[in-house]
Image 1 (cartoon, rainbow, N blue to C red):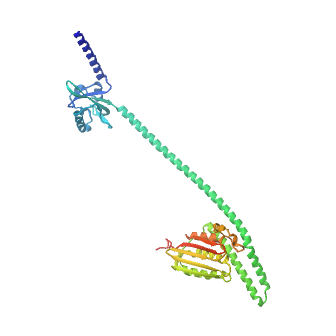
Image 2 (cartoon, rainbow, N blue to C red):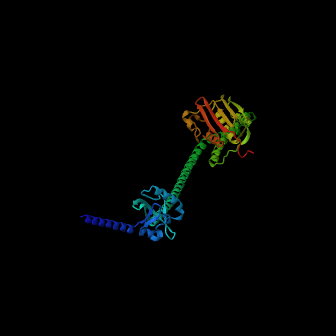
Image 3 (cartoon, helix red, strand yellow):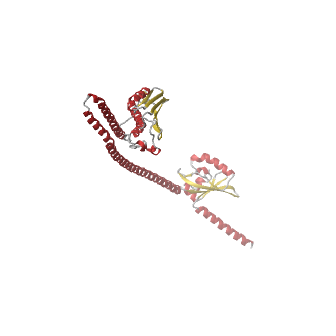
Amino acid sequence: MFDTDILIHTQVMTRHIEMLDALFKHATEGIVVVDKQANIVMLNPKAKELFGYTDRELIGRKVETLIPQRFNKNHVGYRDEYLEAPRARGMGHMMDLFARRKDGSEFPVEVSLSPFKTSDGEFVVSFVIDITERKKQESRIIEANLEIQKLNAELEERVQQRTEELAAAIKRIEQSQEEVVRALTKERELNNMKSQFVTIASHEFRTPLATILSSASLIGRYSHTEDEEKRQKHVQRIKSTVSNLTEILNDFLSIGKLEEGRIHCIPVLTNLNEFCKNLIEEIRGLCKEGQEMFVSYDGEANAWLDKQLLRNVLFNLLSNAIKYSEPGKTISLRVKNWSGLIRIEVQDQGIGIPEQDQGHIFDRFFRANNAGNAQGTGLGLNIVQNYIELMGGTVRFHSEVGLGSTFFVELPNREPASVKL
């Protein structure tokens, strides 16, 4: 019985050894066994195939024989550290590992380590897998990804380019549409302006021309010396009427020039104090009976401004103050010129502007409801606003019906850059 157990045990052990030997010889992984001193003691056929060595050429040599020379120095330290406390693990976590063949060529590998003990001592078995094909596949995948990224980038660039081109085209279309709308609006404004001009001209020109014709006819009847006073009266009427017609024509000419962009602000150094005094003397002749004009000036005498534009602004505001004020009323011009800013106030004691009309007072051809039969085109204040804006200034007003109006003008007093030395 005892002999039979030994026989059975021996047979089982033989089968196990045969199976282990078959696994060792036919494994698809290279197997390299090293001892405690890192000497190669055994390798399977697959390992010999991978590295190109025979048993005799490797048995007893250090494991560094299978490692590229440039890694040997560091590997010795890692190897000794591992052999001090061996454990099952993979090598080169997150690193690329390379092995060296007998002919010196290198190939990428995966390596896992497992320690074991026998009656002969401690050993470590290394399982080596050639991952050349995997690396090639990874490289192909990386190249494909790079190509895809390149194509995506080119596609995005083309999409961006097409988007920009489309946006530019849309912008050009919108600009064209805006230009067409502006042109149509301009044309409507011009047509409206022409219509209003015809209406105003037929109304404003008819009465003055009739007055001129009537006075000219009557002058012809006064042939005696004693009729001189009557002749002079009609001559004065003709002069005044011609002056009014000239003012109307000047308004229309100014609007035309503004529309065409032919009016520019050209500041020159001016004695503003003298300028205001001379203007007041010039305009006094338009005053109604008993009207008085006062002027006050405070600050620096000289200023940089466009004299012609400012003259037109002040002449318009002062003549309006005279026109819409009753005889015997007072009209004031106050000017302050300090610290690069000119402040002008034109105040009257006239009929004032109705509150409902104040939002439109600077509109072209607009006349307040209480303007009555006073001559005017409705262009004066629109021209004033445009001239002041050309000079870089602002205009506003305060008005109450029956109490009068005050217009406030602010203008910069700056030497033009082109004039500075």
